[in-house]
Image 1: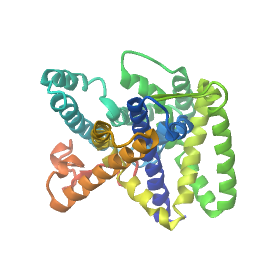
Image 2: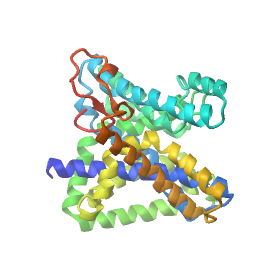
Image 3: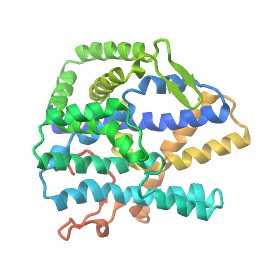
Image 4: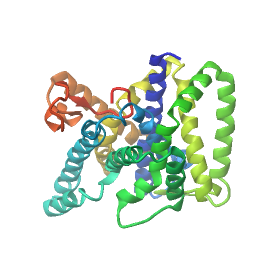
Length: 359
């Protein structure tokens, strides 16, 4: 499997991940606003076991390319890089959604202070991603074997830890998937490569996984609510953990299949810009929903979800395109050279990205 195709499926996987994340917030927001459940609530419920685990697994796939670098260089690319975008967009979100929208600057200042230790809103992923990189590097330096890390991290994930620190809770739940992406990267790439070479067998395997995941999610006990979905047997920690690992790998295989379909290039396009969407989508999502509800233009929860989801994806992409065209405001999606730790950093800026060989 050539390098181009390999990167194609990784971008496809990122595209699937960001679509599911935006869909989650669009679905829950529309459901709570309308007070009922739409069709996409069930799709989000189905994806619950693997939605965020897959995001972390993809993020760890290329960690081997950078983990042996000196601490200063590693920290610049895997910690400072993410924290720059977290800090920038946390300020933007809080100022716009709290300071301006509610005309409450004092509360906005309080939120800004707390955002240092408690990741703000949807941006928690970027915050925790910086922590996972440091943890993996420390474990590598200490020569802790993969099996030991995976065993402890897996137990922490299934323990469903709840502390006063949201960052710690999310780290405990998702670090194992990030590390699994790093530890099993050669096997995952090989599996996807074989699947792309034997699509019939891969499709059969994906169908079996899809049926199993659906059965365990929708068994008696599942409840779809406007802002929440409770699974059936899949809610059991051990089963949920197994479905998360299997589902994350299954989505990688599915991405490999989709990379063979020419008309799916739009998904690859989205995947390449997934963190551009991630940092910005919450603002157009929130305000477009508020406007549509205020105008009372849409009564159907599913339609409201789809429209706001499209707006939340397309507006950040349009903004990114405009910035690149005009050359003004690039700091929003591209880390400037001054925001690096290294004197020998490249003269070029560091764009938003994660989990690629360029890191």
